[in-house]
Image 1 (cartoon, helix red, strand yellow):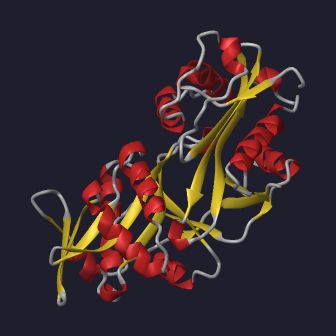
Image 2: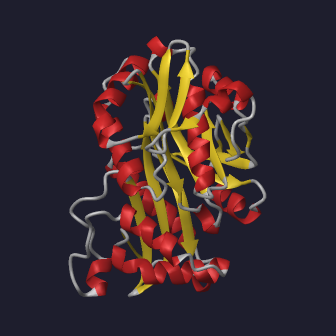
Length: 338
């Protein structure tokens, strides 16, 4: 539709976004969407009070880790899209944009609004010099699979794997060793020293930086700081953990909330990265971190945790599958944006 105007979304759009979501799914999910919108439009406010002027004006700056796009027919929101900028998960050196959600008002469906929204997200990617757009979708969602194929997506390499949040059961001795300390943390005694698993805090940033640099050979302090903001300040599920051996941070796991893409209403956590300092390899620290993470998620009634593993990351694949992760019924799709 040539008369539609594209712009980034603002917190003031929550009413229209929730209305479209409700018309598509029958479930308004206003609280969930409001949280997503606040995070994705952090520090943004409409530059003018006149809504039509807003529709024609982009903000001077954009949130660091998010891209949003709305299609407006005059003052009416015809559709919206939310995407997340991902950089450095599991040591990757590539920055990608992951499309989390896209919704089109039923009145405007079949009129090219969805394709216009994807194009708008691609334009915003180009401004940030990011060339890869990807998304995940249940293979049984044939409508969305067909849509993504029509706008140039194809199957990506890698595998989405997931598990429920039931406690680890592959190693009864290790599972039994996870106790509760006074602060509600998981403590595991090992022959090499006492391993304490506790919540991640901002005070751990320097230690996580050091471990990440040791594992990747890169200075990714900016990535680590951005990831800390995401999991500590933006995520609705605060379950990221660090492991200490005799008071020294030896490993970490960072997890964020999944806001429920494409109308899905499940409560899911996304495992973005897990790392153990090489000096502490083989002492069960990764197992202890994951074990305590699952305890926390289960207590919060989070139903599952999922992650993406590249095909050549055999060590991570073996570790996670040994901990009960299995291939998901979700397709990983990608598109190179030029």
